[in-house]
Image (tube, rainbow, N blue to C red; front, side, top):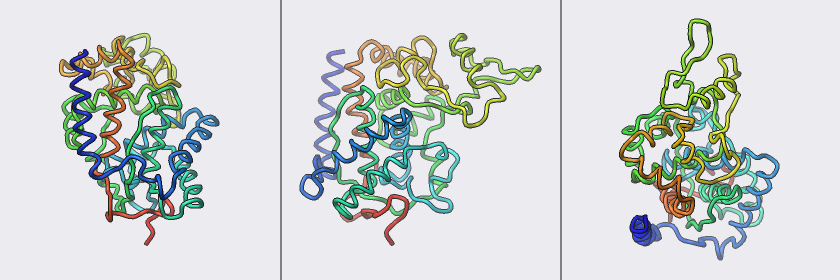
Length: 321
């Protein structure tokens, strides 16, 4: 894997050069020097009082960046905004972003975008639960458009096939390798029963049975206990049955033992294009952490608005106009 690692490093250098034309490291150094510190503090205190926060913040950045780019369009409230699409109804962590924004508006009014707060908060969430510490550039501006009908054609569904996932990622200029790495976000967080129900079916006695034979049967039994047909829609299970509170490479080790929660997780092991990546990542946490830094950088740079595009919202829930 050393040549792999070297190629990854070379790609990163090229990527950093092209990236810095729009976003900059320490963008707020002069205008709001404590910006990153404030976000980190907010994420840290929220996470210590609610252990589900890091997983929520990580999901929030995905759902924001995949629609309209990383511009906080997901946070706009109103009829028919992105937030109103069913795929986004279970996204959480908004209160953490709003809370950091309030402090920043007090200290540096009209300076720090909601879009940057979302990206920084997700970055910090990973580190707080044991993941790598990474630097990300800032300078994103907030978008003014948020439409529910843009959500479905852009985000991923847990029942997607490999080809569907690859297409969706390549639309965002993310590679096959980025897909495998960013799926590693499922090493923390929780999921509603409905998101993997397609792997089971109801038998004649009204009980669930496993129809997806790629799932480990003992794990499947445990899932059926936690998510019986009678379970309320609010019931959630851990994405990673082993170390759900730690950002580590356990997700890939789970895949090797057929314990990927979603169909889209299991697909990574079954597909010849991605299996080798999964094996390498399961065997080498450092490789995962290095790669995570690069793929996360690409994720949080999708379709960013900079310069005079968009605006700096005073409140994340509404545009300034």
